[in-house]
Image (cartoon, rainbow, N blue to C red; front, side, top):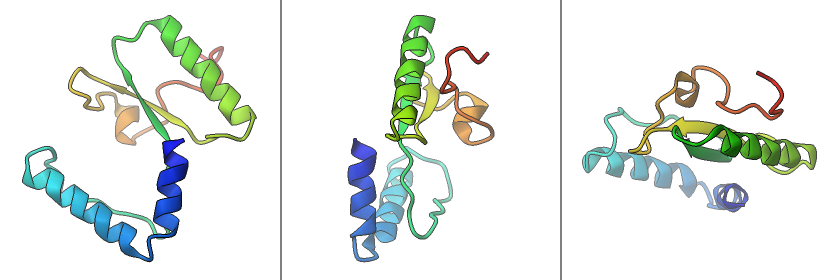
Length: 112
């Protein structure tokens, strides 16, 4: 998975990973893709896999994704996978997507 590859880079970047990520955030702000004041990174960096799901996704697609997520968690792969709902522009639109609560789709599709 990409998260594993990114985590390996962060672990072996000789301390440059924070510098690179802060530079990327500054670039996004400079070209108008972000209005934030910057980013805060933990040390060491812990990469968390995320799936962005279009808010128009059918419930059957959400159920299938929940099954995949449950399987990954049960096998120890991507146990911390986070699913976020986004709008047409790719912007997180629900409060859970903005870090205020848990993920949009639970690991067990039977949980309401």
